[in-house]
Image 1 (cartoon, rainbow, N blue to C red):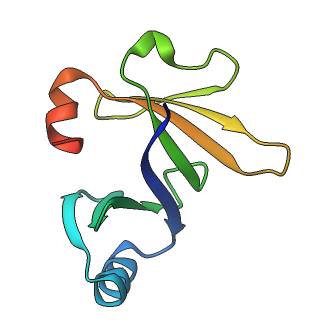
Image 2: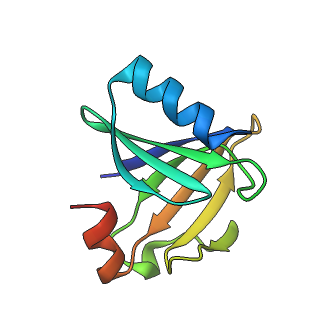
Image 3: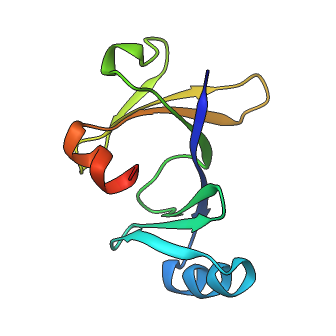
Length: 110
């Protein structure tokens, strides 16, 4: 069963986006750095991603083991040690299959 890890939205101003989404969605910040803000909204994670550093808006699908990542996509090794593989659908949208190392699973999944 595929599990959606997050929905990523590209933004040009993280500070403005953070304030807007917090106000609109009553979200909780679960992670933040200079390029990425992760928000928890009920049962959904929304990632606000700086458009200067991330290639695609996407829906991220969690994989439990690194060997489950697709071999037919664009590999993106994140600075925090996670690995994503972007797969483009026939309409130009992207899925990111994402694997978290054990130490990063504690940060992003618990």
